[in-house]
Every structure is written in C-alpha cells, then in structure tokens.
Image (cartoon, rainbow, N blue to C red; front, side):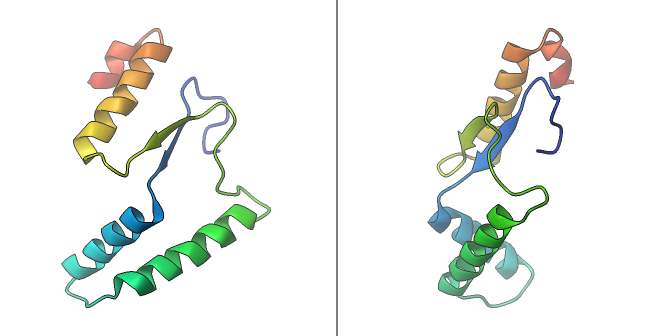
Length: 97
C-alpha cells in the first residue's frame, strides 16, 4: 500500500491477456519486436514474484476499491478514479483541478 492512511485507495488491474497486449504494444512503440506470449509469461512470473515479496507485496488492500481496466480506456479509468475521490472525500471537487 503506497498511502496506507489515504481516504481513497484504488487497486488497478486488468486480465492477464490485456496486460500482455498493452505491454507488447508499449515495447513495439519503442521500435522493438516482441512476442505477446513471451510478454505474458514474463508478466506472470513478475506478478508472482511481486505478490510473494516480503516488503510491500503487490496485493489489494482490504479497504481498496478494485478497478478492472480490461475493457476501459485511460479516460474511463480516470473518470472512475475521480468519481471515487468525489464520492469519498469532502473536497472531491478539488480533485478535478
């Protein structure tokens, strides 16, 4: 958890196939060739390692909201986050500026 005392906690995730597709596209934008299957395997190994580490493991905090970004655009993710902030904080309108 990055900010354990935050009023709003958000955990972003996407299904493994979409995450691999996004990562492969990012690598291709850098002008490199990539195999999506290889990227998927790399992500799976990294996720497992990150979940098992003793310090700051990659797990959703019990009080964090999960946003599944699999079918969402960046703009849609941003709007969902801002909606949660507005709903949960007294100064949520300031989050939009």
